[in-house]
Length: 355
Image 1 (cartoon, helix red, strand yellow):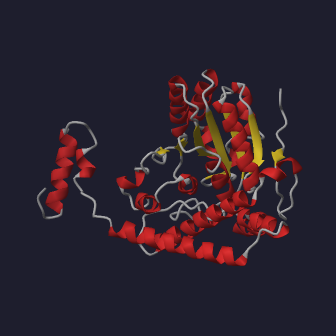
Image 2 (cartoon, helix red, strand yellow; image 1 turned 60 degrees about the horizontal axis):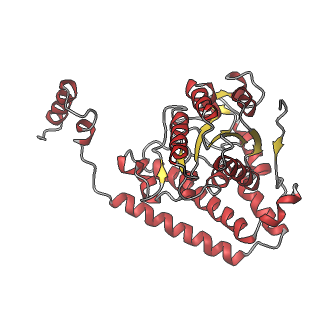
Image 3 (spheres, rainbow, N blue to C red; image 1 turned 60 degrees about the vertical axis):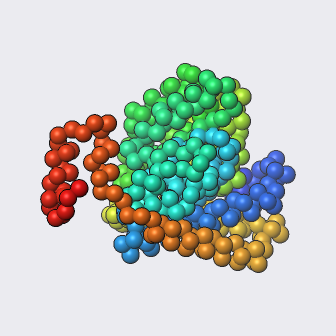
């Protein structure tokens, strides 16, 4: 029985290759694809925070620092796979093909923001903690029954491992050998609670032992390690090998949400030190420079394209028709019930207009 879970790494903080067996698979196209997607979602993330501060978005959950975990895992998927994100995994969904304007709409409280691109199996972001894990197991079981090779991935934070849904999801997937990856981004905090105060286990990965499930800890700031280990888990799943639990050790630089003050529960100078030493984008940049893949002209052009894409997405988001307030009341239940009907009447009376 496996009891030790060292952190798997392919490229270290200085951009040096630490596992030669992956070198041939790390093509220039793949490396640039990683870097492009990480720059794209970081730029998206920073712009979203700026928009929220201007009152143009609602409360927003940033992910800066976790780009390698989200991009590496999302790019390992095939186009017909399922993605079950939390409210912090819009970087992964964007890398998987989610519409950017609609992703911004989600953060404006619009139901349209939960509608994926045609043909993309992206579940609405789960705000209740860990509820998406049984859903992912169920979707994977359905694909299994249909006889497809499609798989599912469920994203979740370290706090989710303290919820019953975490164990139920892993148990179902294990019993039925469902083709699903349980992808944990362990950033050390469940909002304000450090991981050592919410579990006595030394790792998240070891929790898979109870379910006789393969698991691994990876350097979540190493996009190469995340990508190849997720690919291996998915390949195993597609070929009848069942689920895998991946624990990606990473760090979120900023607040839990834009309504949060992280200085109340952690030393933000530690976050600055981690950024200097372990930043996932800097690591890919260092690797590219060490291996003569860095191209200033390509980088400048790419950043320009990303910036233009984001500005266009914001224009689309802000040009979207205003929401119909009736939707708040009319779709709670299949048939109207008197408490909601009364609330609807009171709302329109207070706002001086009729339905």
